[in-house]
Image (tube, rainbow, N blue to C red; front, side):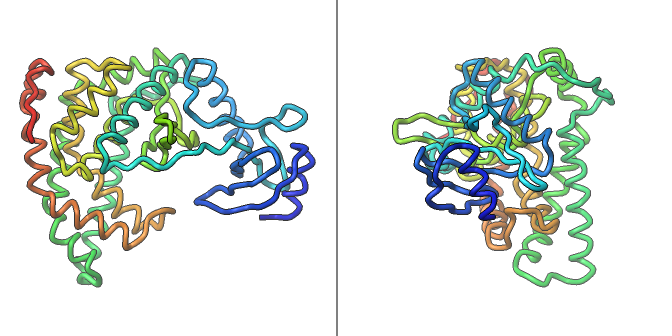
Length: 342
């Protein structure tokens, strides 16, 4: 970390920085005023957005998120050279583990509280409504990219164990993805989209387990507000359920308990629950990891991606059983009649 930046921060915050430790895309600072996290942005409006959003969420009662520190002049965004920096108080907690149903339920509850607070943010511009949710656009692009990756592997022959698995699983992955995208028009997403604009709802859009921190006292915090934006909040729930179900081995009971934990705080209708279950037919875990690796996106590495796709292959039948168990939801039967499976 730049020594000039450290000196500038010490002056701005009237503190002494004893040590700096890098972690992911941030740095941990040990100061005489406590442990802080510093994050840099290329764009001023992005840095301003996250700090103002944190304040707004806290004013609405959602305290379990990041808290930014003001400098001596009251500013929460510190310019230095060609970047803009923010300082957050470090949260003393561990990352959630989707293999733990306790952690999953805590994450679901925290997400629900965030969604309750993340309403009433007027849309600054008029959406160009084209009759398709942004989520489906993203999924369509991801599937097209995966099909190109598969074609190139077929042309060149599989060079790694991962590519062998991709070729083995690609027919069912592509089929599942295409079937969901082709049948998505049956889902009542349009009312959800209009409601999101009308209510000014925000979605987090990156509810990975590492963005939930659990403290020793049992509190759960949702962090990393960089990805938050106007969107249908169900996209967060689909993402959370998709990621946790893999590590929960697609147990229907885990899905039910997580949905109930969320719905006790932010009510979900039977139709919304049915939609979440239907959207889980899209094989997002597999597609996200493979396309992320081949696009060289940060955080995607061969070993981790290989482990995940192997797990998806091993749990193929469990996943199919989970999707088939939602017939009652597809028929819009009462949620109380949903079957629990061991």
